[in-house]
Length: 168
Length: 155
Image 1 (cartoon, rainbow over the protein chains, first blue to last red):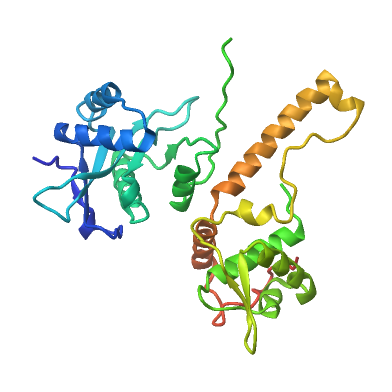
Image 2: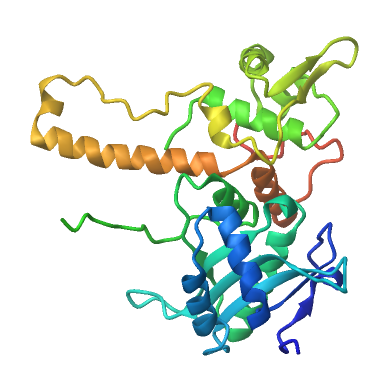
């Protein structure tokens, strides 16, 4: 049973080369999410993803969004082509809440076909429904691929600077 | 951050050429829009040609075409042909050897790093989107698409 959030991107505004449906994650998707993340990052983190599913796929669903893009070319055997995770956050230091994206991954062989755009558009729509007017994320300066992607989607540097220090 | 005129011209030229994939523009056509001499622009195009960002098309109606991948070529790729964007220690002698000089250098390097990261994260395709967004909100392109808009500052 697909959650009411589910949306058919193959009939939506975002053009993808592949018939893709973006919907909420389900428990049965997690092994595919883990496998995709392992292929992309070369790090197997099953425990981490199961925990993320518990927190973002089952709890506080009105403000947490764990969405997957599903290939619909083979309706008998749909599979996960990508996923995006985010939530609305009461932003730091007194700022108004915003939509915060902290994970996005697309099957390497399926890239440059609009799947990432479909996922980002879907979560943007959910953020808008919640009532926030800004979407933010944080990307390492040298993470070329995600940086180019988010920039191509119109994301610009915001009014915050990420700061850190060594705790030694 | 200030970019040299050559860098700005190179970026403008690439943006014009990338907007007309498969078609060429003459140096004079680009120069007319931005109010710069063909002589200066020709030098800029020559540098970009050597770097493989543009290719020249000879003959009547010849000019330049964009030769890169607009979704992979970044502003940094263009800018570093004309600018030294490295965070090389400036040779200020004894000043930089002081703790104050080193602390200031650390801050300036941070600024340089951010500037490089920003230029390196914006592709020509992304820039075209930014341009088109302004074109849509601030008035359409002229019919020819190359005429300099009124009040547009010359370089």
